Image (cartoon, rainbow, N blue to C red; front, side, top):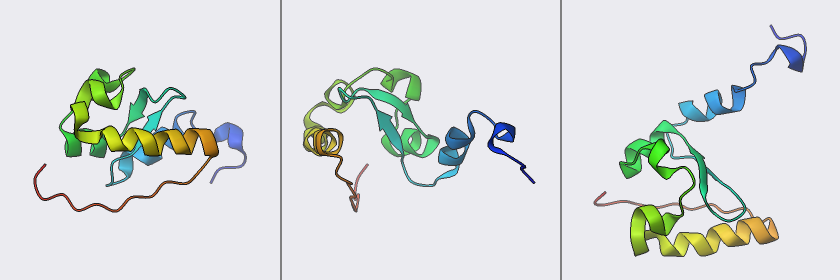
Length: 90
């Protein structure tokens, strides 16, 4: 049992996000990758070290250019962005 927040590990959020079965990502204010979980690496077949500091276009080309528009709205307007997708061919 945890008595107060000082007993929680510093990287608790990262540990929790690593267990999610869905891809999770964190970008900075200019849309560069800061962190992704294992599910993201597996789904997109990329290495997190390769992603760090890069933009979608650097990694995926034009394939995900629409995502950048959505990311900008999240950062600029504080919108919540949810997407449900079906992938037929990774």
